[in-house]
Image 1: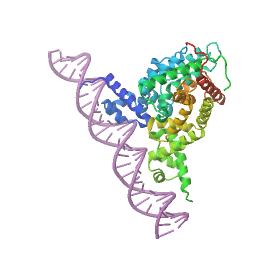
Image 2 (image 1 turned 30 degrees about the horizontal axis):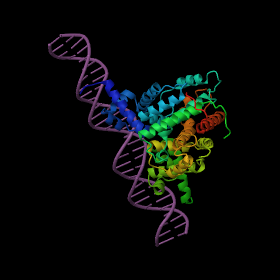
Image 3 (image 1 turned 135 degrees about the horizontal axis):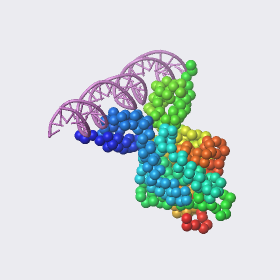
Length: 196
Length: 196
DNA sequence: AGATTGTCAATAACTGGTTATTTACCTAAG
DNA sequence: CTTAGGTAAATAACCAGTTATTGACAATCT
């Protein structure tokens, strides 16, 4: 039996991503993580300190990857929404962990304030604090993120309201198209505002 | 000390709403609920069976109220978004419990399939499965709900990207306006689609 | 009386964290 | 080349405090 600190640390982290993603902080069990990782429980405390330290490491890993792989393209918000949707679809743990973080431990995890601030300022540009669309830049970014995640956080009974299977590849592609188009409309400055 | 079954049941339910909303199913403690309710722990099992039964009752109560008080006005989606935002703002437990339900116990809680199905059909109307806007009715409803909740589920570092206090009444009113306007744009069929 | 409503205390299974100890690997002296 | 010793890595057993749930019993109302 060989000894490999990096590999053990990695196995623990992977198992922790799975466990915390599935059950959240309060629901996660250290024993289950060590079992899945095929590592001794004690090693978790050696490498990560305590349960919260492990949760923090998981958050940094997964959310850090999300931020790195889905850059905010402030000049192409529809594309950003589409790519975000794709990433959340292929990395369900990213969305689940983000939600659990928000609900259970908002203070823990990576701080993306600098990233967001610079993007928001870039969007605002010379137009005061508003995007060319006329909507405040921060609100726009928040709305786009909410739209990108909406399908994946909605209850199944809503997603299936039209009878189609909400998880089929076709349905997901159709929603992706609707998402991108909806964002395009949001950022399009209207030429002739209507009353209703 | 007088005896009042209905009052005791109600106190337990109120305390459970608070506890489950704050900590979720796994994080909630029966002891804390009975303490806050000033009721004996045993009564929880008499009235609600077990922890899951209590969680289910909480979900039915809070989400049922949400569905009743914020009807889906399919002919006024911007207004629906605004009223949903208002309700979630004044009833934070409704959003938190919805999220926790989705993450921890998706199978539990009220089933709104019939409500959604009829609204989606009404929106689709004579236009096949699509809304007058050209977007699929289900997707539209999902997106609008995601938009309404986006401010309230976003991390603080994003909300404060423009330096303003994200919880101030002014800021919330400004975001509400942006939300309603964004939804209006999404449902407006465009007269002259542009490339980018 | 008879059913409902409430109290108290016990229990059996867990849970995060720790202590004491062993095992594998590397290096430098003999 | 071998081997003694130091150190990082891993493990098993354990602990003290919780946790949800229940059984037995008392008070109250109709």
